[in-house]
Image 1: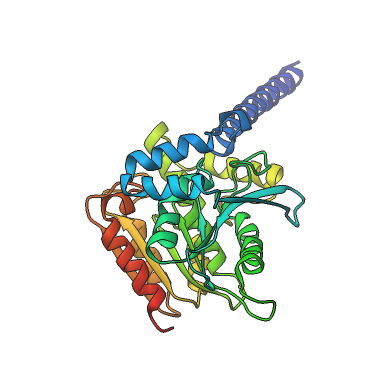
Image 2: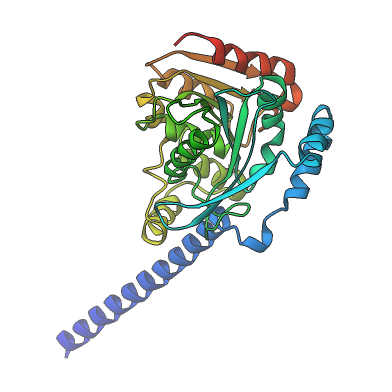
Length: 328
């Protein structure tokens, strides 16, 4: 009798443990699914329009307004679409330099922005430095297809493809090639750094990263603590795994700092020292990680996230120009 009761008690404990495990699993799965949607979800209906970003640029950088009116009024801004190797339809805008040149800037936007959100940087290259400019909409942004945000990781392959497109558009003859700089802000800077660690064509010569993060894991772990007061374990681990299962990449593999370690071409690192969204402390880690090729640093004093150009546009332009003109 006692043996039967003990067996029954054991079964009950096992059943309770299984129920608790199932509840914990479902709870963690639900929390991970929510966090994945919260961080990477960006439905097309939520995307800000091109006009929104044009107006914002005019307000934040009023010295660009006349130039913007001119390039749009004279139909200088062109659209182009292509199908990426991964199968989605991608979009970019581009404009030629005031005078024929092979100098070309590929300008990459940030998180939940779009090509037109980088018109202030296009102004710097096109108006001030006389460059051709191509501005892509990354996967899931602007007029490009896509069902989630890739945080600049898989985007690196698309930007390399856009560099090929820019070379075809802007080269002066079939036998010549362009001279390109890839310049990104925030997630666009993370994309730029991710590109820098890959084998790139010779015509991609320089990189500018403005307030990029060391890794997707580091950025999301910081935001998880800042916004929700939660530690990275276990939610970061399970959300990263879910990202791998749904989208084919994980937070733990998307390490921009490791790409920088492999980078051999000149790079300018920019960061505002009042940046809390992508912590300013990340700048030194990234800068120190680059041990091959020329590098330079610009600390934008008093600037919060992604506002270095707005606050210091003359010095910002001078620092970029110095990188472009420096011998490799």
